[in-house]
Length: 176
Image 1 (tube, rainbow, N blue to C red):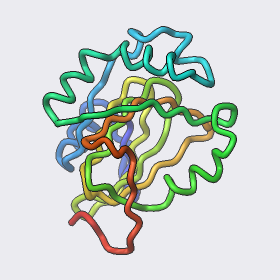
Image 2: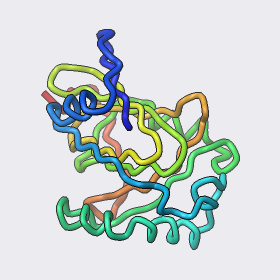
Image 3: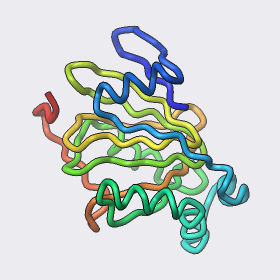
Image 4: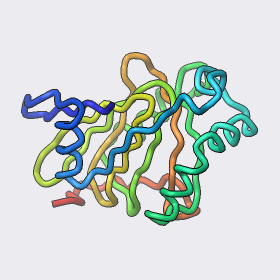
């Protein structure tokens, strides 16, 4: 379950309190059962394209519901760890710079963990996501993402366009 910490020192918020806070700030959060995926796929540090598709197939019904309900038309699997991602430090620089997107940023965490930091409705807060957390950062929300000390995350990303991940780095606030 996601853990929310406000950067004003409030928190951490767990369980229903975290879920309510996120909902009040327009951030979709769901808890998914990641045990339906083959343990080998969730624990392997790297995945072939065939294994990535097998992982996605494990969540086909839920992903189909998300596509129907929110208009997601494409997906991919991202695996970030030192073994799978030799250029991890350089890649994380892009994720760690505050940015926004013209579509929702949706992640289903299937292994590892990461930290989203968002600014919504005048509040800045962090959301620790762990296996089973599906989070949707609303379009135009200023945010950034980083890995925890474990330096490992495996996630299914959902997109509302075929273009995939497209960050906009500008100094202007995108969300009020």
